[in-house]
Length: 321
Image: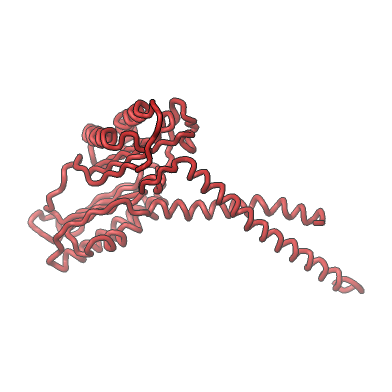
């Protein structure tokens, strides 16, 4: 049987070790989710001048550096002369609920991601990760209009039962007004439906609302009855995910209301229809895994303490300290 001292040690260690284990595991998982690729776009033409390649490298460096202090930044590398074919304009944007630390973690992955999915010298490219995106093009490159559809994903899982269409309609209707009041970003929940919308940083208020309305319409018409839907236009995006047991972390239990910044999980974006149940199972697995690891650590410490105590008693015998 463990001594009272051992019990005291156990009570002190368990909370500290559990907090450390769970926080490190959660941080690693969150960082991994943020930098998962959703989609990419690459131009077919490549740079013909090595100066353009150098300007692109300079652009990457500037954008990554700025992400330590800002969640959106746009700039041009090289001369701004419209007649040149070597100047590169680019930007990054992070999801509206991210800290600058998480934003920087996400943006750091974008240059390597773009170069791995596109030719390193392509004249225009874009990569969308879960937590951020980056795009660039040579000055003068013809850009798509703000509301052009770039990527759409409707989950294969379907919602059974009546009433979901009305819930989805009500939830999606919150987004245009939300981005107007929230300076281009909105996240909220309505009766188990979590919605998120965001516009590119320099898109004006009216243009932002119109862009989001276009994305909402696509999601409403093409993803109806899907557990989740994600619509990315040139300068805005909208996503929704249905949680039948209520949106985690918002206080929304399937009733009306409830607003928060819950991440739309990467598993949903890639078509998994598990919803809240999968998130709960992951948390339970982490907790039990953490407790098992803690048990081994505590057992080792108790054995070590017992051995040290015996050693101390042995050398204390006969007056030696």
